Length: 140
Figure (cartoon, rainbow, N blue to C red):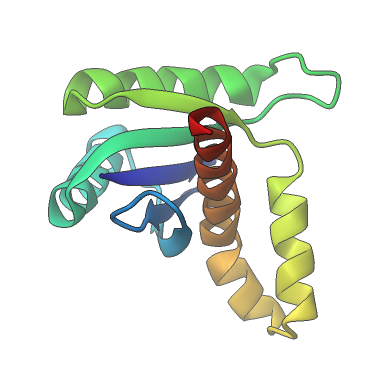
């Protein structure tokens, strides 16, 4: 069963995909946001192409755990995804995933331009891998 992880931002959506067994997450792509219809169409095409059965969306909480305006926007978008695509949508606390992704990319010595191109995709990978790890712990 393939699971897709999403890091939904105001300008881009980072996308990651699990392996067929649901053990590991790999970065897939970054979607440049245009409008709601185009965003949904791009995600729908990826979901169909890769046989995705579930979605995990990073929920951007404040450091104190509360939900801010961006979290509400993400929840609204996730609700739209669930209703339009008919797939289960799970949320995963994404606090500091972009910071961690940035550190990894700096350590990999990528250029600033290349880091900007892939940071959302790497953040989506962190979100999805965290979710997969939590699933695995619950199965033991």
